[in-house]
Length: 325
Ligand SMILES: Nc1ncnc2c1ncn2[C@@H]1O[C@H](COP(=O)(O)OP(=O)(O)OP(=O)(O)O)[C@@H](O)[C@H]1O
Ligand SMILES: [Mg+2]
Image (tube, rainbow, N blue to C red; front, top):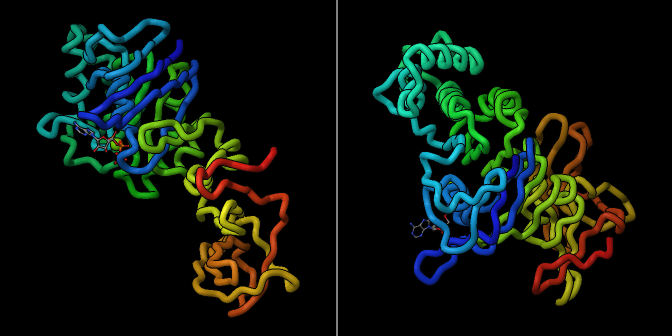
């Protein structure tokens, strides 16, 4: 079972908002589409789901072209940021609706919905309407609905971005257990690089409708191929220093260390995060972000250094990586 996007593209007027997208997602694999707002992430999902038609290329599911298959016949489980539940229907009715449309018997509907409610831990909320649930509970109803479709592919479009940090932490194990743990390929859209790093087997960084780099979270963090990817992956953001007009040197905030023989710095700002602290320093080479242990004493002025082996070098005009790794 596999999802394949072959040279997919979409344009509005003269502008291609998605171009030459090639991607294969294997059995049980989760690929995150990561990128800034407007880069084409939702468009890509809509093309896979058949909710929109490509102007270029083809989508294959388990080897079968989807070009002539309408959205309602594609075996896809989709979860949206906005939940997309019917507000006037109970949780139970929201879930039985799809089964009813697909022709399940009343008894079968009841059994399968009861079973899925147990799986998403909502059995005692079945008669409530969406407005009477918390955001996390609503999103679990949306997950249940996707599960009930028994799909070949899961598509998730920012499923947790409406939830606060605590609820996201609560929902992540459910996502892993119910969706990421299964044999279906998963495409997970997010603009949150931490979420992509935590959940995905591979990440595709999208920029202006094209894949800038695709790889494991470790590959993107350790060897970003462009300065755009370098700044998109890892928080706080990688420092970029201009050594001359042709080159930019990148160094991660967690790779800076205090060193009395190093570059003199002045403290501009400090955020304490418990186990770590994030510093903003001013130096003759510009402002630098630094991460150090939470219990490190910080003075108004200090000096820092870093191991040159940890430097990332990029071409100043093209942004392409110059290191020979
Ligand atoms: N029907 C349309 N007509 C014209 N332009 C459109 C249409 N739908 C989307 N776009 C444009 O296509 C681009 C990509 O939109 P898309 O919704 O895929 O972005 P996204 O990456 O999902 O962004 P976000 O993170 O904000 O959800 C945007 O610039 C958007 O304005
Ligand atoms: Mg979107």
